[in-house]
Image (cartoon, rainbow, N blue to C red):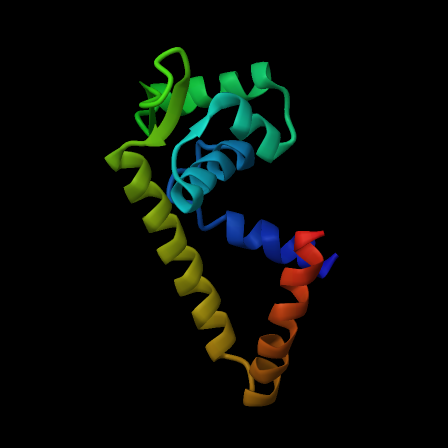
Length: 128
């Protein structure tokens, strides 16, 4: 329950409150992993292609992503971040980091060390 509450609190630091968790997840994927085909995004997020298409359409309407023809296969379309999308992800990360840094700074040193030791384990668990 604590992990879910922490995740919810971090999501509250989003730079655009109108985005859903799924929409921001797509922006984060594109930021970390670069342009993707629609099907690859859907597979990565474990949703259907039509569902991902709706998500991408919303993000495109908001000006956060754009579609372009694949360089290797003009029949395929890649989804990539616009400058506004890049800025939104960066600002959200900045806000989340600032909030988390402030909270961690308020903890005693022993508690900060315990959190630091737990991070690698949480990464292993999240990757499963």
